[in-house]
Amino acid sequence: MSNAKLGLLVLWPTFWTGFPLKMVAALLMLAAGVHPWEGVGLEALLVLSIPIDVWALGLCSRTVFLERLSVDPPKGTGLRLWGLWAVFSVVYLPLLFMILGGVKSLAQSAVHATLHFVESNVIVIPIAEKISLELVMWGLPATIVLIILVYGWLFGLGALAQRFVRASTPVEGAFQDIVSKWDLLRIPRDQPLLLTAFTGTGVVLIMVFWGLLPVSTPHPHEEYEFVDVQKVEKKIVPKKVIKSAEQILARAEATLKELEKENPAAETAKGEKGAAGQEKPSTQATPAAAKKPAATGAAGSDGHDHDHGDHQH
Image 1 (spheres, one colour):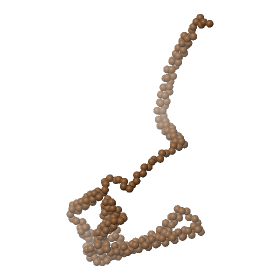
Image 2 (tube, rainbow, N blue to C red; image 1 turned 30 degrees about the vertical axis):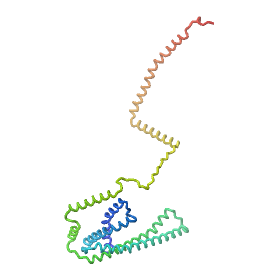
Image 3 (spheres, rainbow, N blue to C red; image 1 turned 60 degrees about the vertical axis):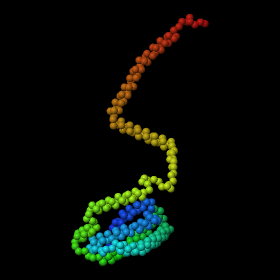
Image 4 (cartoon, rainbow, N blue to C red; image 1 turned 135 degrees about the vertical axis):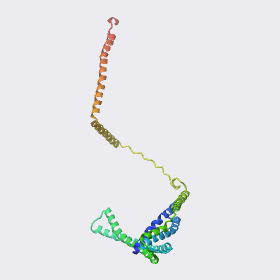
């Protein structure tokens, strides 16, 4: 097996094995009011990560050695391999960032000079296309260099792991027997005890988390300044109001037309009832109108019927 592949096979499961435990520690620090990404919190998290990484590396390296290489590593492989990997990473990773930063700055300067020459002598490039060209032109070489450097890092980790492969003892037997043996070594036979241990650990961590919280309900920070934001009343624009009213009326008219098309019989019946209702008051008003002139005439005769002798000149 190549060194880079061996390094990746051991590093990848090691990271994901210890990551959940580190997340639990970070959450407990946050509950206690200690930021795990700066100052004392970061230092405490790094110190706490050392035993987690040692345990995870020993577990995953032995798993890979047994399943892929059919060898059983010696005891203490996790601690010694973690020490070698830590020293190598402390030396290699800063060099990786320095080389990558230099390549990035050099590529950006070359791209800017090239595009400036093109815009001065050939054609003016629009801003959007210029940004895309710059990103592609300097991002491609930087990405290639990053892949090469990461491959070199994995190659170094695998080369250090190969020492323990050579020092391991070969395991005889079929692959299924080797896997079963390793499973029995990792998982205890008392399953109820294992379940009880996991459950108890979870309960204890939850109690510690809630105990470290200053308050159990969300609240604003003490330094938060409340700002009374007043809602700005919208100005009434007559044209918009009239336009919206016209639209509403047009929709109502269209709705009425659709209803008339859907129920023409109901509309006809309503029309006949309306016509009959209008005719009845007119017929009732006709006799009253006929009686009214007679009464008016009688009143007129009573008022104007007098003798000429009543007037004295």
